[in-house]
Image 1 (cartoon, rainbow, N blue to C red):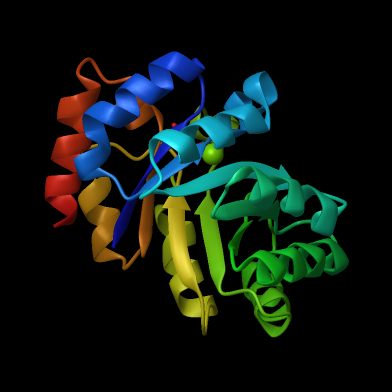
Image 2: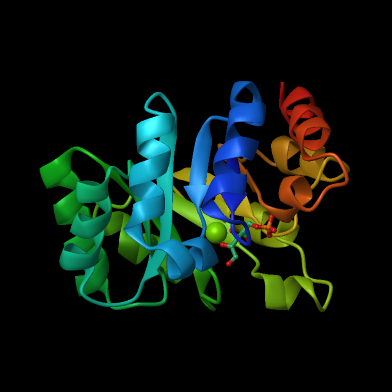
Length: 208
Ligand code: 5RP
Ligand code: MG
């Protein structure tokens, strides 16, 4: 099981400093969607330069032009890019083709997918093997958590590694571990904690 630190609402310098402090507790560094909006692929390049031994995920949430946009991520040094599960299967296949060309990975983010079993069958038939269960910040604000969606995904998926994201913190991480997530993604539960280093360490300890 891996821990992914999502860097969303943070500056490049603060993100690099935080990652340096928590690097022993995390496996994957996510350059989050708002971070990419702010800094672009420069952030991916900088993190890969300073943390060459960590996996770098670019949370691009690609919706179109799958081959072109994912190739931009891989050229910048990303090990994983994300594409939305709600988009056209052609876009997802474009990302997979680019990933194969560069020897990298694609994670399909299932945020707002209605019929999960049907979509999982379609994308796995297309060759997807890494799927993300995700309850976004706007849904979190009305009290929704990814617990039920993770349980549903574990039943639906036949071949994929499963990540989970959506407001996970040191108090709740154990339940996601018990449900069998392969990658646990934590953003605000670390970056917004009073002591982010202690929060990352507490989460990593509970995952062990
Ligand atoms: C939002 C995201 C976040 O990176 C993801 O939800 C993790 O952050 P948090 O733990 O704060 O929910 O992709 O769209
Ligand atoms: Mg994210």
